Length: 294
Image (tube, rainbow, N blue to C red; front, side, top):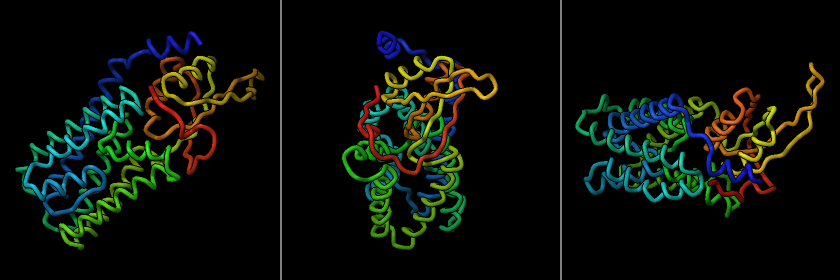
């Protein structure tokens, strides 16, 4: 167990190249979200789900800039994200939220490209989906409701996806009373398109991933996943078909937001490790929901 303690305190930091790549793509993703919001959705009274949707509604009601609400409403969830997902995730999310908030403020004076709400919903949803997908793919998030859903997932008999959907139905429904029901329906179109584009961008939007790892350092990887990701692992016995050598296969299940960190942990220990990641539609039993990430 000494290795576990050391790993939790002295794990390798991201290389400069990987860090620069993460910063670049989170910046690009957050900037695209700003464009989708201020150039397409907001001027046409079309909202997105989550904190973004709430921010658009509050901005409309108060006359204050959208970026202010995007930043302030996400702040409480950053602390929650730090406790649940770790420092790297929290910092990545903070950076993305700051870029998104500043971006919407800069783009606010820019006129919209179209006043056709259907075109705005389609193209705004596409741009929004690409932006959010990039941020998630590189280890961050732009919306606190998903973090809340992960927390609720431990206490309620609802999946993360079901909890997020419940929040968004309420938020999109509220748009009908404020902007009119036709705009609420356009908002639903934009939300659906963004949802599908996110799926394409990050190559899979399922809440859980099954992970199979074959490495010459299975014990070190398994202990590191437990210490740094808070996920239990199962060791399976395997045999190489070509060499006939005995192999220890590591199996675990993680959420999609944890996938980027898992890959980083494995690369830190064994860059040559074989990694297979698959989508999981449902996870039940064991201690999957009862975990904390440090």
